Image 1: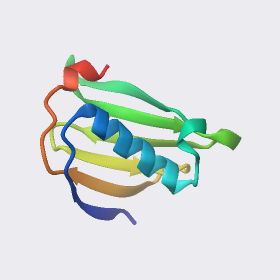
Image 2 (image 1 turned 45 degrees about the vertical axis):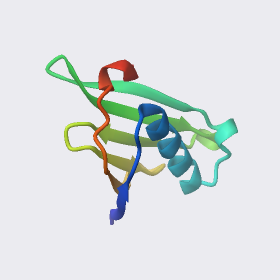
Image 3 (image 1 turned 180 degrees about the horizontal axis):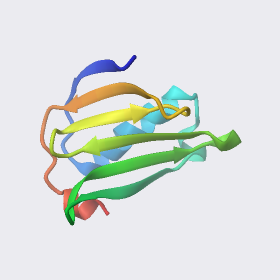
Amino acid sequence: MTETAPPVALYSLDELREFVHRTLCRRENLLAEQAPLGELPLLREGRNCGIQFIVQGPRAVRLSAIWASDVNVVYFYDARGERYLKVELRYRLTKVADAA
């Protein structure tokens, strides 16, 4: 079952990256410095519509999150690929094109 968290106030893509990295690492008790955050731009009809964040941990643990910029929500997925958390962002982040 997906938990819905209260809206989060983030003001930049860097703050979003930090929030996502911290949240994903906390899920599997990973040390952030040992499980770097990667990201891929998401495109729809050639336009950037969000970012997929990925944390690769030890023992082939892979966690991910998707920021859907059109609805301004981040969806978090555990190591089994199941969505466990949905977080709405209070403020719209506008520099999506610079994320890639």
